[in-house]
Image (tube, rainbow, N blue to C red; front, side, top):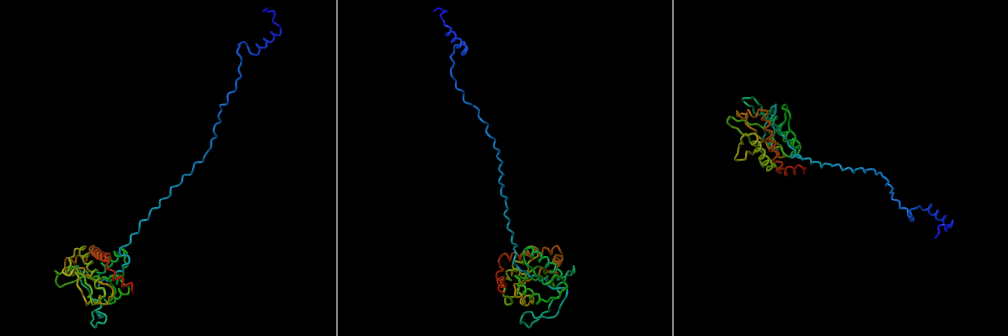
Length: 294
């Protein structure tokens, strides 16, 4: 073909094509915009921290309060004799025409001059304190030496208080200096409605007393117990009652012991342990039943 034969129209179309698409000869392809890859940042949600649930306060289980072993016991103590000697007479028992002096003078230590009524009271006060510490209610016929209370009045004092047990405290004497030891006295069976209770209480007390003090037991063949039907302080008492001769003031060795305040502590402890053993052994049923029935 002759170059000159290109018409001006054709030349114009070619020029336009070059301007539009360049000289690469590539035919443009239609493209589609890529989808957006932007991801919005997550919103920050502030969550208030939960208040921790408080642990329940541990409430300690209270320890049970121990029950005093002598709680409910009513103990009468009669420290024998007194400063005032009273030779006036009174019947030895209800309905009995025989009489005895209201209060005898009591024994005296020949070496130390120790007076029985003073020893009896000192031991009685110590015994009272120990019994009360164990829960007992304690009533004493006297708390001082300067009184005048007859043996009958002492017995009736225990009746009015419905004591569970009464104990009379005495020291002994003898013309024989070698005589020594401790023993119990209880009312004769025909003088009391509580003979077995008295016997049982006396047995516990004398054994504990001799064990604690080391003072030997008199009347071992009878368990250290002697029965008396002639004692005013027993015969007018309608409650269980016992008495103890704690030792001989006329024996040199025992006199020194009985007059010693430190040894009196031991004496009181021995008596207390005997009463405690008796009460806890359950031998009080008859005494308590009689008291509560009144």
